[in-house]
Length: 355
Ligand code: AMP
Ligand code: MG
Image (cartoon, rainbow, N blue to C red; front, side):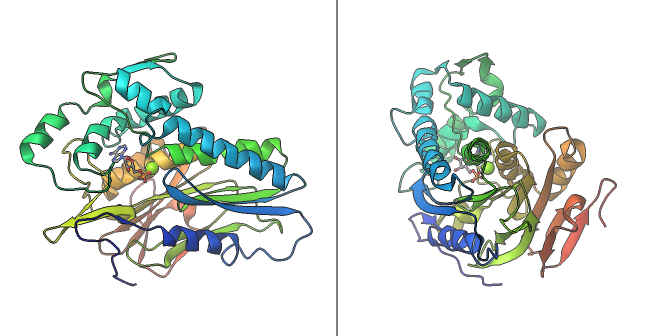
């Protein structure tokens, strides 16, 4: 496996090309989509600060695609902390207020995951993201005093959501960046259903969700990106699933020979270092998969395995995990035994222990 790193010292490293490659492979080589009579439509766009590829198959593929792209831009305008007039920016500026149904849905899910992960997943990390400079172009390690003061603002237990009214604690601000793309891909699946597509696959910055099977009836083949290379360390075969990965390699900077990435442990204010370099969640529920991939990255192997044992089979929220540890060994939960292949050393997490 390649050990190349792509960051710039003092700047911000972001892997823009890899997602494109990933999408191209997903839509073509990996999916192995051959000739088909079914009309199809594909589009690459840039939204939510990342490259996205959407591919639709069906009589109404073009219309579904146009509607999907419109929905992505609408959600981007609603949820982006980088847009001053977004709903999230308004909530942050005003310390809360009425929220749209979509935002309400995401906050409710985020609060559930917050409680269940004992704060490893926390959308009130936004002041920390700003302090570290991850919201701009010049990230840097903050000083300890500033970090301590900032940490006082973090804690989703001080968010109150009653119906569509959100109130936040003093100085608090939210960031839905860990859940928004999964919510969006799940929403696209609803649209594809409304347009009666036969098959579709979307990759939103490498986060994949597929609708149905491939047009020929076989399973989609989704590659899981190597954390430190341009290839894939494994392939999961799936239908009607989201395959969503979190990793520090997605966004990071270097300072004084140390690497600092964008997934923070909200309890310490530091980039999460729990022994994982990649955390993937496979689930029918895209929003859940996105929240949990970030949460697992923060929690590490043992706590993620326990989380799966406790909640992995919950009705409407079934999920499986693919976790890569720093020594490049891969741990999957037992539901993926048939669906996942890799050449890395592989371990299987079971309800009782490890196989
Ligand atoms: P993802 O790529 O889904 O893992 O999301 C990463 C993004 O989620 C970051 O860029 C932040 O905006 C936000 N974030 C970082 N750390 C956390 C955390 N511990 N809990 C919730 N959101 C986080
Ligand atoms: Mg996430």
